[in-house]
Length: 256
Length: 253
Image (cartoon, rainbow over all chains, first blue to last red; front, side, top):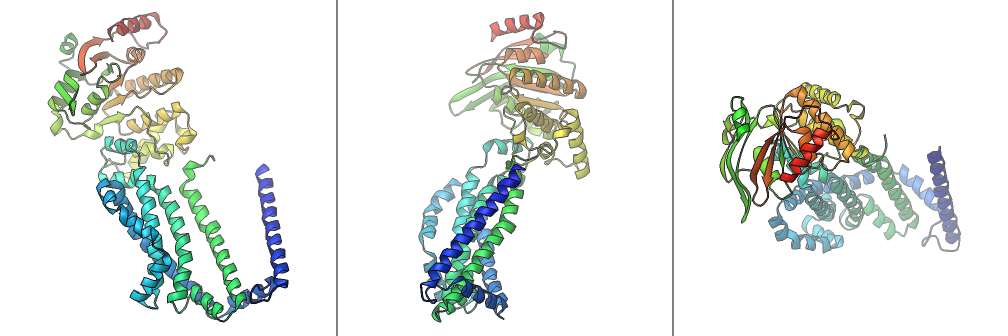
């Protein structure tokens, strides 16, 4: 009962916030030229025409495809590397400076390199997403691997488990929360930098459309895409990530 | 050495001769000789730092001895292969927080060659045996210390060990819960006839549980005395005969 009440008050708060933003937006838009700040109605109209345009699904699909490819490659490469660094102090000490370099190089620089190396192609965006996401996943898995409890490993050894069994039954479950946090961060960053990469090195996709709209000073289009992206990310968060997290880490919650 | 003579006819779970262990320059165990009969409950008693845990690790095969010989069930430790027959219970319960009670118990079987349905059957049996059926699906963080200890015991027993080694397994529990776990252990011992070797610094625990008590001297650990306890069971800690034994044994440690 109390929880339902809490929930409904939260919904009310969110709706109120949305209304405040809409009113401020509408008021400000009324006093400015629409190419600087298009009003809500104009953006809404742009959004509907966008949703009905022929290339819409193709563009969203192209961007998603690149983000997911780059992200999965990052997981595929970053996880075993993180595990390796986490298990061997020697490897970790040796490679640590390299990781610092990776973390400081801006995504825009990767994008420029990508254009030099791959030109206008899918590979450019995939590469930028990969270079951004991979160090994040690697670092988190590495940190996670260092938190694996010696006690649990000894327990497995007392049952005469093999190294592979210890990896699967003790190390991976211990690392999973760190991996999840890293993957989430990496996906968020990857998603954002993909747009930057697409404005420079693609001939379709959301980033490309954004630049096109900017070139033609179609501010309402830019706003429409922004609203759409925010909605997509919120949907992903609430529809996939949150439930997945709740299920994966159900042993931490105090239900039952 | 009289005790050793008495049990010589029975098959031995452990027979150790002149075990030595040193870590770097520190001599931890010195010339330990010890026989344990099958089905016996033996307490290894000593102050902290006397090498009790090291001795237990050597008996479990997790740690090699520097020199000396050890045979397990009549087979030299180097050629002994049936390690699944020896269960090891740690001082902490070491339950995996991401596994439910029944999954934690099943962990004990996951290195064995048993089929899936046989494993599930064993887990169900052990849950029943230690009275954890209503908590099968609970997470470790939802359990009290005594319950967690019970799960750890169940995880050791699920492999149906012939030998159970315990490293101060109940030392972290409050006195009344510890007493319950003692009763539980004795009940399961009577049921299975397994050999139990446990390490403790608690004299009362040794008197309540053990058939024989091995007293270790510290630094380096060596056997000072071996006492047989012939007190009738059940041994109640408040019983005058028990408290008298505890008093006498305390003088020796």
